[in-house]
Image (tube, rainbow, N blue to C red; front, side, top):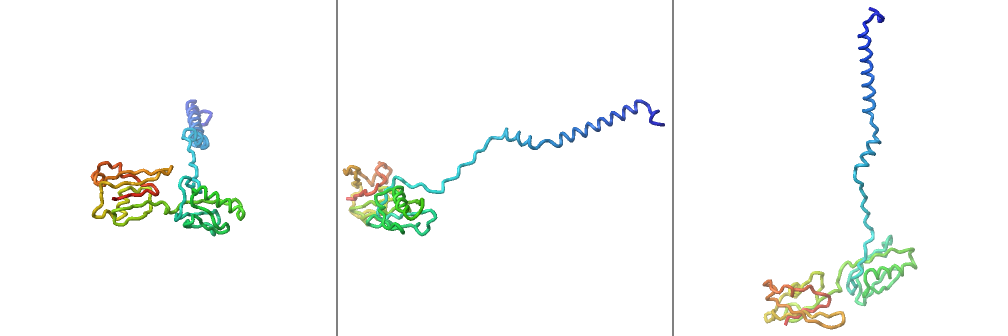
Length: 224
């Protein structure tokens, strides 16, 4: 049978099948090749924004409250100057000695004040010196223990030293120590002196524990 004599329904069916096949090919191309840029843009619109954390400063901030004293050990760092950077103790006269600038008064200054003074003196030798001063070891802050203890004397003070700690460091009591009559002598900013009671017997039993105060520089624990 020739094409001209085929039934009309066969021609229409063939044409319909071709149309369906062509439509399927077009749909697959449009759906399978989705625009990746559009997808990423949609995700960026829905995803929460993330802010990068600021980088920490490379230069440590100097303490502006602590006052340097004799015997303290200072860590002095001059940026890109290893021959000047060093750990150095403060002498008994309150001074330190550094290359290029010689003697510098350290005692009585805060680390921030000292690093400014060192930087000022270094300007004659180094362009824009970057100086950091940190108290590496605190040795100038001391307290005293006197009276009926095994080892009376001066001791290095830490941030957490209490009256009980002081007695322990001094070796404990002698035989006739009046453990209920201990007191702390403390100088005020105006030069006045206060007397703070400490009853050892009560404190070790959990009574009047507020008497077990933290010691301050130059406090004196007296054990009668």
